[in-house]
Length: 257
Ligand code: NAD
Image (cartoon, helix red, strand yellow):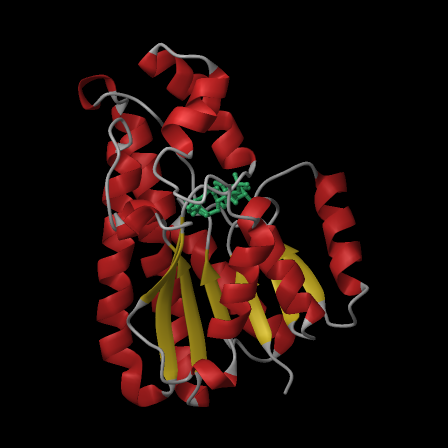
């Protein structure tokens, strides 16, 4: 059956892989996120080759009215909204006492509050259809903490609570709400953290990869974006209709410790 999906922060990394997997499955896809116009045009063209409709909306996840418009336009353009993937996220690595207040606010807005705003707008549309899938890209940091990532860890723990609350509110409406908790995935977000973490801890960038990032990932390997996308695709499927209010960890054993 034809499905329409919106994926926040899908111009890069995990979001782009999820958008690609959904487009490949035949879904209509609304892309979102930042980036140079020519790169976004190229992504739209690449995804359109899979046969579904593909559009782009540049809503800034710190702006509730733009988020509302993203959801409304997805529904208007595709005539339906079946899958919402809350994926947009940023990171900042700093000690709490030196953490810039504006960065705290921005991370809470993008990594947590934006999901409340997308859900607030999407839920009435999904309820009217009697069906829906909401997938929140949380993190291993939604379950456990690391130092120097106060805003990120707080936001990701918050999204776990929002996931469970929404799942309970929506269970009888055919709408499932789940989180995916990846460990370290080598995407631009993680690559950008390497120099900052090296500076904060006074170690080399190679040591950040081996001793900090993969230290807690027992498989000693990064997660791939395609592995996260495959899990999202499963959660979006009809077969996953009884899976709600929970999370899948894809973290090479990190949170088993
Ligand atoms: P990324 O930097 O590759 O992609 C982030 C996306 O979010 C981009 O498309 C970017 O344009 C978009 N974005 C950023 N700010 C935005 C804003 N204000 N409005 C709209 N879009 C915005 O990062 P990624 O690693 O693919 O991360 C995606 C999600 O996965 C994030 O929520 C992140 O916390 C989570 N995650 C990542 C990892 C990892 O190791 N990479 C691990 C666990 C969870």
